[in-house]
Image 1 (tube, rainbow over the protein chains, first blue to last red):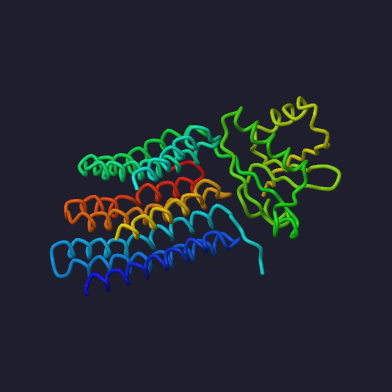
Image 2 (tube, rainbow over the protein chains, first blue to last red):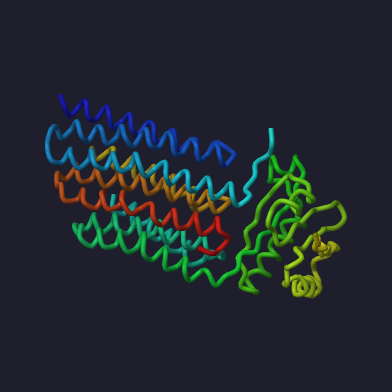
Length: 97
Length: 180
Length: 83
């Protein structure tokens, strides 16, 4: 029973990551692409690891996975912000609406 | 699973060697070292994988960037009209040929070109942004503005004089320095 | 479980294509970020598939150190070649 719930969670994570990659190729504008990529990707990542936690129950393995989720929640917005600031400060302008 | 990862590894290695621009090669090398540490994990060697992840993705990237500081960055602004900026597929053939020649010149002089497309007028770029060259395409000729401190301008002019098969006339303008 | 791992490797290959053909340097950095995060999820799934909790140490090292290279590259580009 627990295995089936874990598989459903992991499939949801794969679904979100697939939509993120679709958005990476669909949009023409760089700033839209980076927003879609980072947001959807983080959501899919957390759902995928939640599936792993449910699969292993309450154990030492799950504690390490919780620590990884905590680290990624801090680091991933930091990287996206650094890339976007670098692109904006170097003069990579988009067309004004 | 292993075979798919090995194919990805070979593609990344070939792209690292054959690319022209140095900064893109550093990015490819980072992706290469990430992938190879996953392959070490698949071969049941997690300790080697940890060492590769620390050294390959952090230390060697910083070392290559320190080595790349020898190259000077050459900032080139391309002024386009709005229709060209929307859809860059219908740029003219002369424009593409000019871009290829500029890449050749930068590779010869050991410069690293950084190319930025914009729709702003040339006057606002001269006032507000740091630049080395501004290129504007007109129907009959190409106009190039150069920065007052750009000491590569003479060699650029003589380089385009020697390329005889490039037919479009080029007009060079050296921007006067404003003394306040 | 194995099906999910193979599907994730296919998605990783698709996002790697963004590195290979992205027009500007920042597109390549975005692709590198996405490849790194997918590889992290892949290592956790592989450790869960084998049931060995030692493989998770590699994932922790990735999450702690993987961002240093990307941040140094973006700072290098932003300051026009000087640190």
